[in-house]
Image (cartoon, rainbow, N blue to C red; front, side):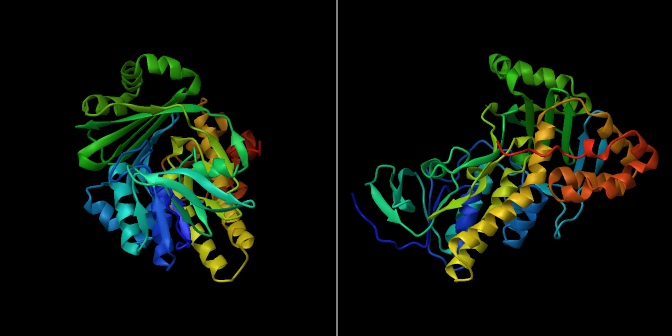
Amino acid sequence: MNGSTSNHDAIVVGARAAGSSTAMLLARRGHRVLAVDRASFPSDTLSTHQVQVPGVARLARWGLLGRLADAGTPAARKVRFDPGPALLEGHLPTFEGVNAIYSPRRTVLDALLVDAAREAGAEIRERFAVEEVLIEDGVVVGIRGKEKGGAEVVERAPLVIGADGKRSTVADAVAAPAYHEQPVRTMACYAYWEGVELDGGWLRSREGVALGAWPTNDRLTLVFMALPLERFDAFRADVEGTVVTALAAAGELGERILAGRRVERFRSSPDLPNRFRVPFGPGWALAGDAGLVMDPVTGQGIGHAFRDADLIADAVDAWRGGVGTFEEAFGAYQAARDAGTKPMFDLTQDIAAMAAPRREFRLLLEGIAGRQEEIDRFLGLITGSTPIPDYFSPSNLRRLIGVRGIAKVALSKIRPKPTRAA
């Protein structure tokens, strides 16, 4: 085995959305970074594709949004949301200078981020398998692994960041505790269609099925479907039949999709956990799905990965710069991550339950019907740019529903039900 000295300030395990953006930001701030991944780039991976508006704002801030657009990734500024009681159509409100969702293929997005990390000075090793996370006296000190066809090596650093997804090797090695854990609620699948006429994104939900359609690269449309988990076996027995049946029952959205042609195979998964993990400990930290994952029905994962990269870069700066201890710096990361995510986590659990719309929700839709500014604000809510606590505050709900509606309903029944730690 070849040994290496500690010539890195940080090692990032995983180099997709969370890992490459974390490596890029750390390298831009002058830290010596090694990032490793089993994959080579460009390559595909299961994904919602969605970069919600706050994530798009980060790409713009990092100087990468133009590259994403130049790669042929279309912007979706108009959204149709059809939950059954009403069809809401509008434009996404501007957030930090941007007002669009992008849905890039991961072959495009991940390669773009890896290139940006390399340009910043990070070392990226592709096709590198981590065989062991090295722990000495309870502290993570590095990794042992090898590139495909290469010799086994040891790399050491004072910080190892697990950005290796919901089944994280790093999180498992340190037994990172889980909390706010909820059961798997859905299964999801997606495929790409050509020839679908859309002028933005479209979301449709009915009891027992959710559908989404978003423009992506190569003039294709990403078509997403979620079903309750208990339907997975029946889905697997007839994948195409299940999807076509759902689309045939989906009104205008289904008609538009079925008028096009599917060009690639269906990709699906029932492995959709909902949990927070403690995201740091002696010598280690977690980013993206490794530390926090939720049902993909709201498409928040990529944006959360970008958010974590920013927060971890701030934590490393504070710790390495002597502003605070490791525990203080990364404790601030956990606090900011949790406060920024918990309201959307709760809302996602409500949506993933795929129940028929409650009377209280119908009253809310009636309250905003015909009020374009309020419709746009609501679309910002479900796409991550309108603050959820502010939107569901009693004063705002009274304003939207009106005094007559308030007399009919308890406001607490409209707000997302908070989840508790398991």
